[in-house]
Length: 119
Image (cartoon, rainbow, N blue to C red):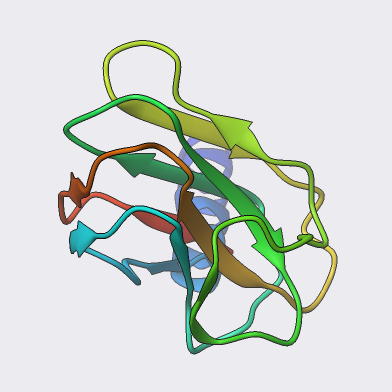
């Protein structure tokens, strides 16, 4: 009986992992005054970005894909980096949003490949 319970937990865990996904939607240089939204839209549960300077922000957004003004209004609350070049936010998994990262600083910011959202 115990073996069946362990197998059932393992299978449920595998199914949950298979259903979850991540989109690494941006890496590289984001010039000052611009933001970038992912092409795909999902039920975002978590969003994060890592850059070489502080002051950038992440959020979820609707509509816009690609580049836009860093000061545009987003559908979700922004979480901004204040230390270590990292910003993250937990979201409610409501459908369907794009990942958004913006640079309102006075310098270009280089983002690494870990910038992503989970859905």
